[in-house]
Length: 145
Image (cartoon, rainbow, N blue to C red):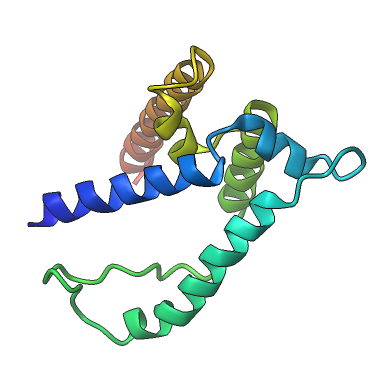
């Protein structure tokens, strides 16, 4: 049931991205172009998500298990460190340059030509590079200990 729920949630999210026009990279770059022809439509999509999240998150924090019975795994980190800041900057620069973030890029694979494929390939390569550096760092730490 968990896989079916994940599939349906992903399909609903992807359809919502397509219907709202958020798979169009010009919407994102238009939103980020504050000095030019600013497009506020992404702000409305984000605002809707923030409203829903802020209404439902308090209920999630009180639960030990999800509706489907899986353990709730809410974030516990509260510090802003170098890794968080650099990760956020990297994400933001990539988002601004490409006009895609992971969800819209995946939703665009079937109808937007080569650009989302290049983005997804670069995203996967970045994820693999991160995993490799994490393993090397952990191996170096364990040898030093």
